[in-house]
Length: 392
Image (cartoon, rainbow, N blue to C red; front, side, top):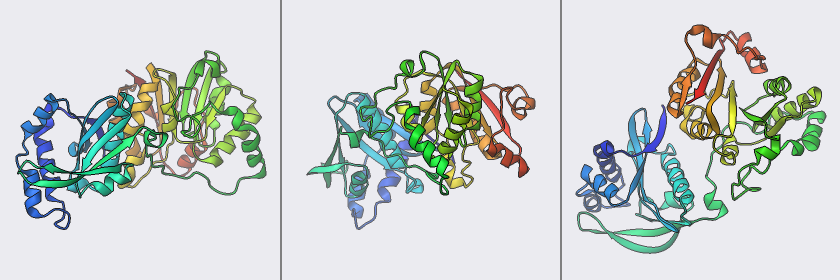
């Protein structure tokens, strides 16, 4: 399944009305009585959303395989903003859609100058809102369209470091087997000096952009997402001393392997972030990067895990933001379904696929060096694909 988060459009109004009614109808009787649900849903119609937009509301939608799975309506403001409604289709519940929609809307509101977001939650939604970081500041009633007064909790989230920090799930390994003594020494002695600067929320809660000019002396900047054991990154650094390269890898054993290769090669134009690339994206300015690499990423083969792949809007949108226009984005994978998802999602994020025929994706790049993951794939009889895109 493919999930897309996007802004609501006028033509979405009929689908929103249907989803809204289904979400209300699914509230259990022990939370809202049938007559309360009927009153809440009374008068819901497509033109309700058009009138709301005309009055200043905006809508963020989650779409799964072309079907609208949830929506969040909100009003911007400074210093106070408001989330008006948050609904998920019962067929798509328990998939984290409400959380991802809320994070998207909160980012827009806080970035727009809000320092506080308020919402009113009915009995069915209060637990979920508390889990999203909202606290109850009062109790009230909401007169529904059908005329019944329904109890609601007035809740808020203020701009604090914790509130601004998005709740990002991390999937995958942070550490594997026991490190060799030499690798532990590399981490202790070398890693801090290779930091690109304050990236984590703990060290940079204000999300100040990294000073790449000071970091690399005005050189062109490249980015490798998930560098594995670091073979490719060190190879590129040695071949391109006039380029500064930032590598991002949360798997600490891979980081330790890279540090050993850096010592052996003597390259000095590399920086390393041993964590989540989304945190790195936060502190890179627009149009900061000239080339990016995604080489043999975790395939997450199970269908229910496909949204964990890098080639989703959550990762591709910020990648597109930090890449210069015309920048190259290279993807290598030996998983056919990953190829399919890459070719479907990357162009949506603002990239053109640079292929004219099969030879283009079957042939490695001229400056390519096979990684240990590629060698493993070849031993298993899998076929590598080399996909090149250009930021448009």
